[in-house]
Amino acid sequence: MNTYKVLLPLVVHTEDGSYAQGETFQKEFSVEDERTNLQSGLLEIVPSEWKVTGSSRVCETDPGDTFTHAFTLGEQELLVGVHIEAVQPAEPEKPARTRRKKED
Image 1 (spheres, rainbow, N blue to C red):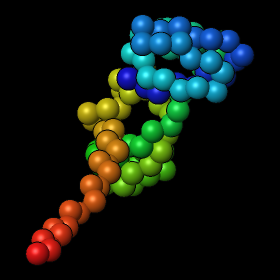
Image 2: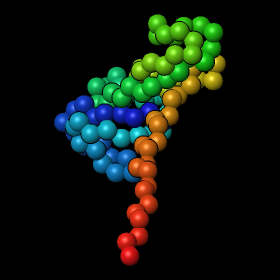
Image 3: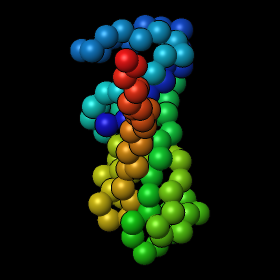
């Protein structure tokens, strides 16, 4: 699944909601539907973070390092699991709780 940004002054309707120009959303398109939406100029893929897991460089990035790129679903089918993996965003740290001393 990719995150997409609406480029044209139109509203894009999905099962999850409606998105106007400049807004982003996640959607599970087919490879063909994604290609059509990208080629028409309606949408663009929002870049995401990836880690090189294979032994070859990907997007000028060494194995073990991370990089940001907007891969199409077709490219992901070829690369994920063999050469790259998606990097999940880190969970925000919860502030440490401090105990207050009970006042008598």
